[in-house]
Image (cartoon, rainbow, N blue to C red; front, side, top):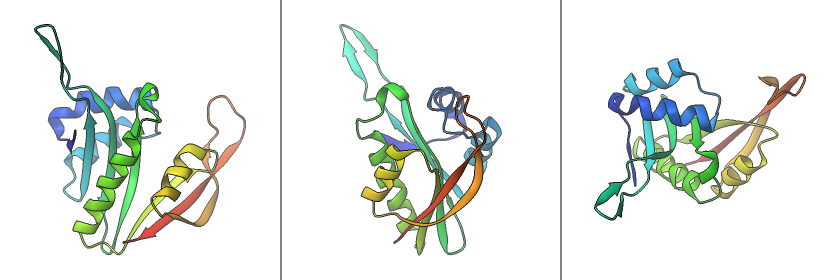
Length: 157
């Protein structure tokens, strides 16, 4: 189930980001939850009954989209590592596109690590095109030396 997140969901969102490691700081998450021009959405596990105990309400993924004057920007998308490859990112991205359209944005923008092929394929599936590159934008990922390029991508709405 996808729903907007609020400040009340902050602890679950912070815990998810620690595992998803999408590169968003705690401060950024906090600010996004309190910014009226931002929308933070979450993908929640459907409650499951095990005997007489209901198990559920686990945040599996999230996305942050910001409304700009003529465009919208996907600032983050994160899914629990053990849940990746199950379509959660695609469902979140579909909801982000729907939000940007509802805002009547002309384009949806994002940036992604050049090495993140799984994310790039997802974005291409959702009709994003590469617009450019920011050289040495990201710190090196996981014990690698140097820095990494960011791909700038967008899609018309």
